[in-house]
Image 1 (cartoon, one colour):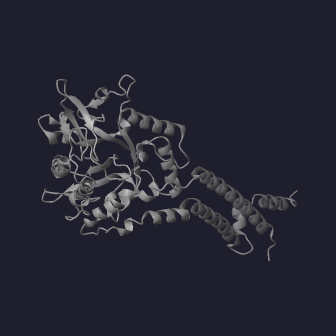
Image 2 (image 1 turned 90 degrees about the horizontal axis):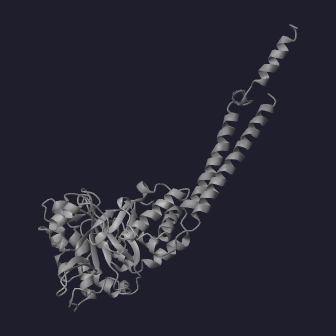
Image 3 (image 1 turned 60 degrees about the vertical axis):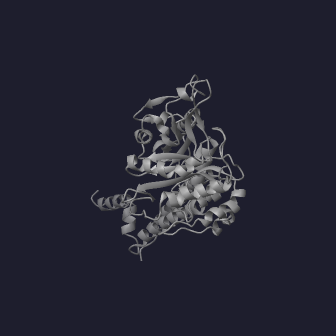
Length: 435
């Protein structure tokens, strides 16, 4: 019995050896560890390459379409850090792309970052323009910029947006004069002259000071009735009629602007008599419109005077962060996400407002285009975009979900194969005789 004990103990010891023992006792120190690193490095590399091919590579036809779309833009004078683009861009627009561009329901987010602010978006066909506005140091002007340090005294709302838009509309309506309240001037786009362009002012600070100054700077547009307005119209012996009178341009306020700030500009309760600036309502907070209220804007739900009016007479957009309200849809829209999206879009439509989702992903391209496609299919009022040419040319990449399933399946397959090869390799190293 005692003679067999050492052999039995040795056999049990060999049985208990694991992969860690194999790595440590390999014929050549570090060989098993190097094999492990090699297997998994190759796996990770293949997965990364697969991800790049499916999500990062942009189809060649996208570059072709964008290049052809920029033919007119290349003739525009670019703005630089110290001064906006010259006024010659107005005449270039009037004699060029305005005759061929088809307007689209897309909103140029952070438009002032473009090489040619305003005109790049118009050339792409966008009907929404966004500018972030700050008060100048002397309190006498409105500066455009993403943050306070990036604002310049030469980059003003007047020079970058108000004056060019006024120049375009004057050029489109050289002899026009309204004969009645219902007359409407020609719009920015020759192809669809009744299209209204949205100028959204994102107020970054001091709304009670900025908005009165904006109202003052809009006066030349107001004088020519280029601004969409809400007005009580006198109609003979009948009672005054409250009505929304469309025009080539509508000014919408967002950011720090509240209803109190907006209403206070007009003073003496004149807001309910006349106003030509509107609010960006919170889409996620819109109360649903009942069947009895639908079609009667005066009966639309109002949360409170402090929180805002959500009627088309007072608001235009109804916006919300896509990231915060819908969340990630990397694996596709879930049933609950799609239900929320449809409810919000339908509620905005029934309230007479234009739905808009900001903070949508811009990368990967397939992912961005997939979200654009779903939003458009579900009837979103305005597509919020950073790539205006990519949004309006219609060559969105297809098959995003197939790519997702392919990369998940491919990654799992590569991982399983790598694990099998790793195990086989370690087994062969274990069986290899010592030298």
